[in-house]
Length: 288
Image 1 (tube, rainbow, N blue to C red):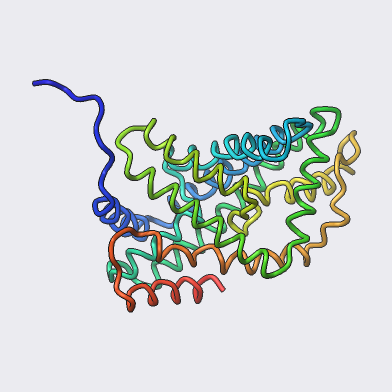
Image 2: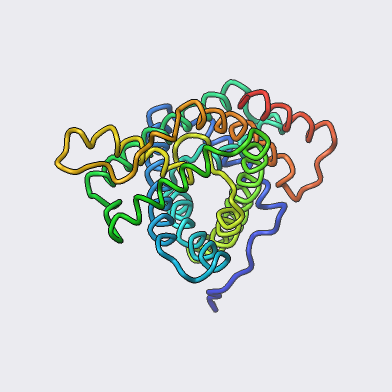
């Protein structure tokens, strides 16, 4: 029998069924397993964020090209999450589809989101601590540390409306990246499906999950850098003094609300108005 090594992607209707089935499996996942996979996801996305920070440092290619290259490098984080099977809070917002279809309960969705969120935070902070001890910020004569500081300052300076809109923009593209990846039949398919939406989200300035993962990772780096420097022989590469916790938290809240709002409109399957409204209102309520 002739073997075909090239096959079409799964059609949209089949992807929708796969998303719902995966949502049921995620909702039933054991708490310990979910937490460990969430820690890994936080670490994976943080590695992508650090990679992005290094690539952005000292670039003279112009704004657009630099953002493009930075977005491609940041894609590493979600590629690791999807291919390795980790649990990222942002992507797990798609559980709302299985909930809207009546396949899982509100409580199971809330449990998944809470554990994934907490695990993402811990995974990020652990990764950032290792990055600090490895003295990555000293690369390029301290330029990487300065880039991290500038990224953190730009995030904390966002208004509530800007942060909310960037959260919506982020999850629109992250969920689409996961959606497209689920349509692929091979690892290469999934990687290509992820790269373009994630590159676009980073280039456009979207803000990833409100835990200190992803594009918020440089903020966590600056805090840890300052906190640990008194116990090391080195001085802080970047100071978090302008980064008041309150100013960062002020932006994380609207981003938290904005992240899941796009989920209901991702599905290419026709959704009736009642189901759409139910999904959207549920996402706002559970993340507000």
